[in-house]
Length: 313
Image (cartoon, rainbow, N blue to C red; front, side, top):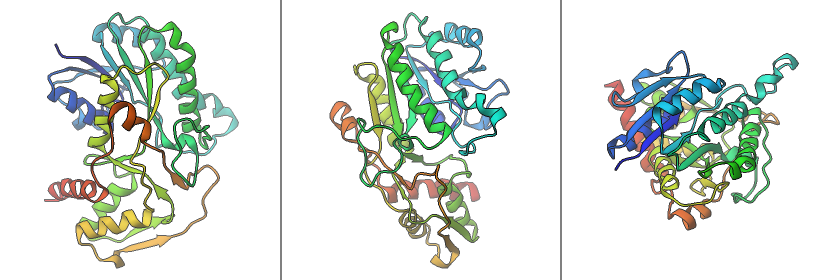
């Protein structure tokens, strides 16, 4: 018998790929989106059940979970991509929104009779910058409102774990990329520029970035959902490799056959809240799940570039 899956942020980049993977296996998939609806409705598969819900409203979330009655819950919705700087004093209450949404979701999920696993997303950026990929036991050093809320979420989940019938696991993502990612991110914007003949400016080319293709991230999430790991477990879904942004760009140029003179590099000053080295050791996921990122950077960029080429054509 298939799973009943609920994905918050299910209309987002990773969420839509995860939903498609479960649908391909015959599972019943529900996605929770903002009350105004998904910003990119084309990402929502017609066989998914869509719930437009405010994650800050406990009654709405309880009603949604009662209708979906999930066996697996993925919490991917977050404020990723917003301005990482500290807002003005009057807006400080909004800094805890991601944490508040998680606590509301946990309270509603506690009432789900058949829920057997919840997986929440985090980021390698929670560790801050380290010269070597840090393990999950490394003390976090978040530098932004977003990553601070993610760190707090992991600890709050562990605190309430004894009151829950199901384990809550945390997946800390590397920079996940692939077809369908928003061009607000560097790699898809770069590939679009390469294929359209423009000139692209790259800032902070010597920063280090662990990159994982979206298929691998989805497989990691699904391996966690199939596991019997105890609540509170944190796993890095990372490659363990940290090419520079300059090397990532060079790979994209090679894959697309783009001349190097179409790229301009700017070594701008890095604000305190930015992470120069985004990395995390993937050894725990390998030992506990048998999971490793298997798609090379070159292959992943090539697959992403082909998807852009098809759109251009």
